[in-house]
Length: 236
Image (cartoon, rainbow, N blue to C red; front, side, top):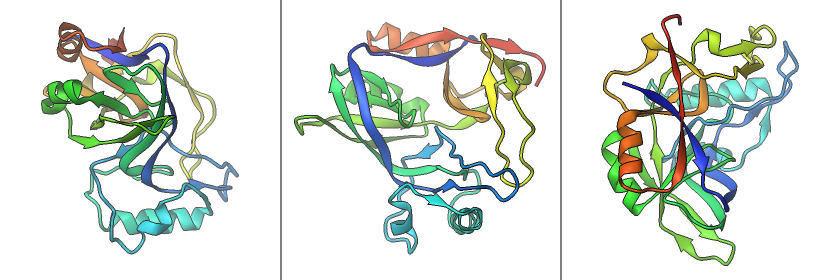
């Protein structure tokens, strides 16, 4: 089985101001390292927070003190499934964005790294994803477009040889700067045997797929994606 990174290949198509309905706040001024930061690429569009007592506080992306972030994270942890990843910036609910330029069958939103599919592509890929959620996408003229976000699991990992840690991880907020290497290396032990499209758990903006997805997309003539080969490493 071969593995690939999914990249945007939709020339002339741009998504602007992409945001989900609810989002955990960014961390402001960690008391140990002083960093203000947010995670990107972690979203659960299939989770609806409507009617929950705290949902109004999550409707706008905002800065929050470290203690406020911890309190909100713990509140959500008590009400959500245990496998939901809760980091600063974790998002929930439908994606809202504006499409400028020519539409494609599949789009990757640069603001959120959400993977969007039109009706044909969503129907084709639905058996391979966690959920298919209607997104609120419109043109600059206000025309509503029929796109769906594909909710993907976070289950694979980039091998330790595949990125460079630029400084130690903060023991309080766990922030750590890192850069990806020139060649993509995935940890063999982390690759799921029965899932064919997913995200890297330790680099969640990265969307990964097997040759099954590549064959489905290319065989159906769907536009908008490029498949970049990934290497497999025996080392974690």
